Image 1: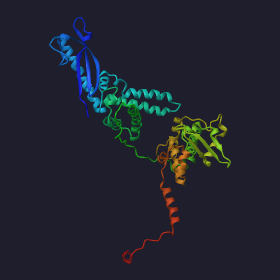
Image 2: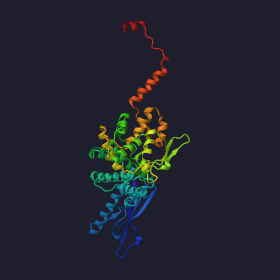
Image 3: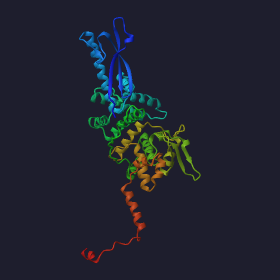
Image 4: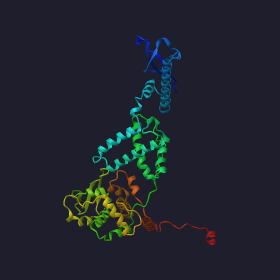
Length: 416
């Protein structure tokens, strides 16, 4: 049940000055809670109306004091309504703090976002990636521009955040900036984290994201088919770095290792078991999860090809990602592959074309990819039509003769 707000103004007569002026004090009462504050005004005790809580008369001094008292009263009532709307039940002390600006200064969206990003930047290279930091930085920039354009402010109190605000920011990114669904999520997720921190600290009484359901982009054909892989493998690209790029991409497609992990792969992470098979045992740069991959012949051949070029512990010659990415786009053009190719598609190709389509269980694929959760592997996993065809052929052979044809009545057979 909401308790009524009462605001009383009175004089502190024990601090009366020789000219008869006394400090004006205020008292906020809500239910059984009470908070006092100084109005930072002085009033003539001889003209003070204790019942009305203001000065009598129309002198310049009386009008000025009464005008300021009215302004304070309006401000207290406005903060009271905002707090009740956001929290439900409030105390007199909370209203006083809000009115005096004590609470709102440290509970603003952009201030907390900036503080989070500053701490995050210091963790880059230790347990955070630079690319992840860039997402938070860009999300901060888009949110800042959105606040200025939509609300004409540089910052916003957490008390003002609601579902309508989240929807408006989503609309701004999706419609006004014309971003794709997954790009929108890149900027919504960082905001979601900041809001979650605010909820946990009690700055927001209810999570404004509770009813938000993001629109995700449709999954695309991200893996290469066997035919496309064979085309890339059989083509000579006439330059050393382009051929090196091809070899590293094929290595990714036959091991599932991301490009960042290929770049840091060392000889120590190559393990030969007692049965003579070569394995890679490495911790993923992105998550730290250990991957254990038994190498196929294609991957072993690529490792052997660059043995003589090693000058240190790295398995392969180093090639910057931007250079490799440009080379890979050109490789796709030369091979007649009419879509953009990225190194991450090598990882998808390993999961779908090389492993799952050949009958390797998804649990095994998940372990080799270094996923913490098999649900992540399912995103990579695309079962091809050829895989379904082959599996159904095998099933057809296994159940042949085990089931009798459906019997038909004589009348049905005659009609046919």
